[in-house]
Image (cartoon, rainbow, N blue to C red; front, side):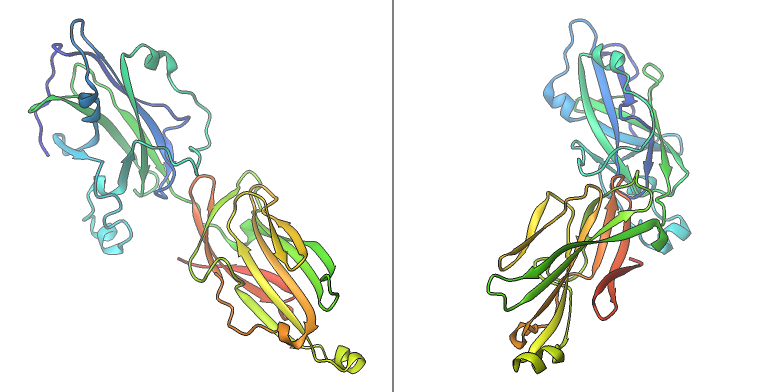
Length: 335
């Protein structure tokens, strides 16, 4: 859209936009954010109302005078190759502006500081959080505008204020299987209270091989998180020859979203999961007991997950098994 912004000293003495997170860089995953702060000071005898503050909008400029609001249409066409190849997507389609920080993810890992001295000298300020799906390696100049009254707007892009931030997009890394580790820890070996069932439990920890990265979130792509995603059973024939009772050896595999530490329980047996920060927990439980322990329904827990690091980069994994279910494994899964 084309707007004639006011460029006078009749209302504002200061109108600035600054990056106030520790870097102007952000991954193009649509999750990570850059924090920008718009600060304003009216001239003596003027004021800035809450309604006027609520009218602030963030924009970029196309073709010199075409102001593109970043507040709408986020992601439109971003995942469609025909848009990217034919350059049909508009630049604003790849940005989202929010008034709230996504506390699940951290800012880009870089040194820096917010210009507190500038912000403290302003009468009013408002924070915005920007995320992007734009191609990596690009730079965008971002501005702010505010409506004083109907038909009268001021912008940081005018010669009087001449303020913008430059955001730099970084391509999200593509991880391989070797970029992760899956560590097995033996958690329990014993039996239930009635001693009819032998129980053996291993807890697995999925982590990034580079320990500065952490698994902070995971989204299941299929199944019910409350149940196992794999089971296998076989007759425990040697036990039958000793007892005259049919016994089964059964394997169950479970996956758990990262979060607060908690317990996994089977009858009176309990083991802790989610105890390792930065890791995702999986569990293998082996039961040897009466034939009735064999599962009576197919496994329908989630096998495929989207795993997120602390910067919002996501990677697809699919859980597998080996050694007849005695061990848990995984492969990378293209989303």
